[in-house]
Image (cartoon, rainbow, N blue to C red; front, side):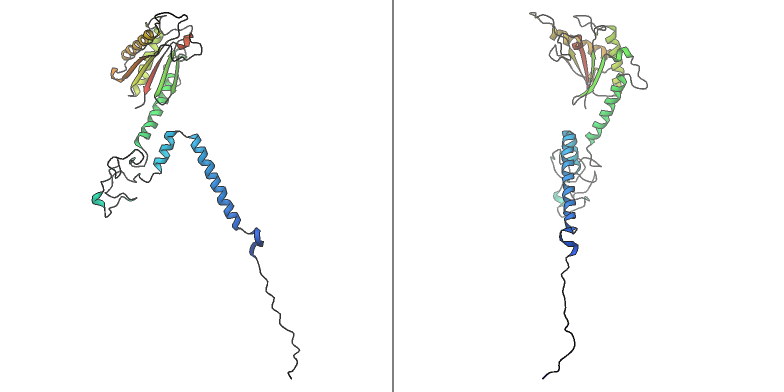
Length: 279
């Protein structure tokens, strides 16, 4: 018979502790933050696609293209540091104008020291020169000699083709004598000024003549011959004013096919367009 013990039994209580009270933990916050970041990046991408031009998008794609070397002149390898590889003898040297391809595409062509295409730099300089010319033609330049009366006959705009300088008539100020290609004193002054201002660049120029429609239908409509004659007169006056003849790329008569005013017989349609073409 065993002796009875007066000691109380030992009871061990095990309690399961759940960290963070279940759904109040921090793991879901990390996942949510990743989701919000991804959505922000997505909407930023959508905005960029809508707010940029095709040329700008191509520039961004070329900038992040892995085919662009870090240095313009390099060894035979095609790695990030332009080092040699075991296939060096089979790879053409990278000289900054074509990477390792014999006939590279524009997307894979090496774009110079900084990874930015040289033509993009040229485009930026060209845009700046166009803006400077436009400001001077509007009489806003610091040394502009354009009078208010002359400036009201000038409209400039930059397009994909280049800088368009439009000279147009008004009811009280004509560029040509009615029905002829004989220029008035106003047109001579305008073209002399245009020749002087555009002498700061070397872009070629295209000249287009436009005339208003005739009020009646006639058998031999003179608008084609007249618009071309006025464009050719403009060419002669520009060359006399100092524009080099070799910079004239084309002289075109557009008749009354490209109207500037909704009224086809408006004098506003009698105009000359001088386009400084992009290089």
